[in-house]
Image (cartoon, rainbow, N blue to C red; front, side, top):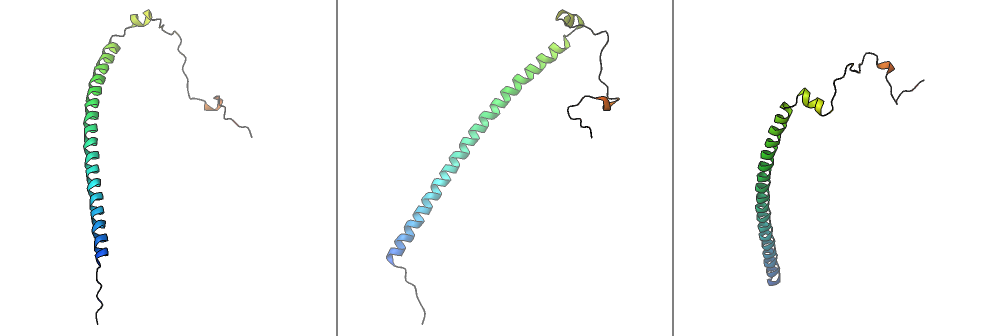
Length: 107
């Protein structure tokens, strides 16, 4: 004798509403994902426009900097108070044992 399981009306209704709920949630998730994707694309395009504008202004500033840098002369430096040093003082690494340090320990 075979056992046959009969799906009652209550189980069919519960199964139907479960499928409807899952379908509705899937549809809402799909719509939300499309909305988020569209917004991210719009934000990305806006950021690309901003990058283009900032890059153009940065290029202009670089050319201005190079122009000003090339116009610096010794007379201009003297005018702004810079002086030529007669005896320059250099730091050398010839004897590192006599260097000052806050991290010296004597044992």
